Image (cartoon, rainbow, N blue to C red):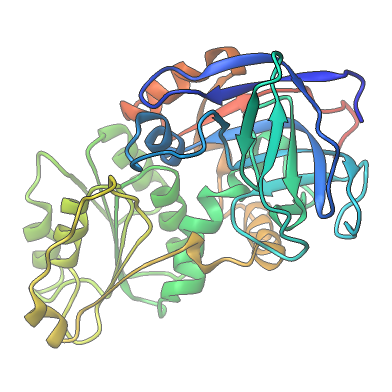
Length: 358
C-alpha cells in the first residue's frame, strides 16, 4: 500500500509523559470505509495538549495515536469508498462529513503490541482514516495552510458563520486568541461589526487581532476587561461573545459581558474534565443566552470550500496563524510551546508534498 512495509508515528503511551516516536508500525488491511493517507502536514491544537496531559480524565485507549487535522494524499481505499480515490489530495478533519463512518483502527507495533487510533489521526507518516473525515483539498490552498481547515477554521469561523450569524453592525467580543479565537475574529470582520473586541493574555496576539480588524483589545490580566466592554456598550454588553480560552472561569466572565434581552455567548473551549461553570440564573431569565458549539456546527463538505473562498479573496490570512514548524521528532517541543502560549498553532511537517502538487 506504500513504498514501505512499515511507517513511523507519534504515540501517547502514558498520560502526562512525553509522546513517543514509534518506528516500524505495520500497515493494517483496510476495512470497508477506510482509507490510507500519506500525511504531508498536521496541525497541533490544545485538544492534543489536553489529551497528553490527562486533562480529559481517564484514557481507556492507551497507547494511541493523536492528531485530528492535516493534509495528505490518498494512497489506497477500502471497500465502498467513493468520496475519494488514490491520488486525491485531501484535508483530514475530526468533524464528520459525508461518507462512511468506519470507526477507529488498531495497528500492530514493532513488537506486535496493539496501538489504537480513532477515525482520524495525523501524527504519523501514514494513517488509516475514515472516509467521512476527509474532504478533497480546495484549489488554491497550500498543503501547510490547509491543516487549518481541519479544526481551527471550521470551528472558530464556523461559530460566526453558522452559529452566531451576526447582523451587520453588531457588537462582538472574542475572548481567547488561539487558533479558534483568531479564526472567529477573522470571520467576524466580514460582517462589518461596529465594535469588535479581542481579549487575551498575550500582547502579541492582541497586536495581531488589532491588525486583523479588532476595534478594541484588552489584556486579560492587566485590564478590567469586563468593565471596559460594558463601558464601550453603554453598560449593556455586546450582542455576541465567542469564548475560546479553555477555562471555566473565562466562560463565566464572558457571560457577564453579553447584553440582556438576546445577547449570546457561544463557547468552543474545552475546560479540564470535572470543571464546572456557575451562572446567575436571573441573567438567563433576563434573556441572556449561552451555548457550546461542536465544531462550529460546520459541515466540512460544504464549509471548507466557503472558507477556502474567503482565503482566496484575502479575508483569511492563514499564514499568520501558523507560528512555528516542527517535525515528528520535535513534536513534544510543539506541545510545550502551545501549552505555554508561545504560539497560536503548531505546524508539523511530516512528508514533503510532490513538487507539482496543486
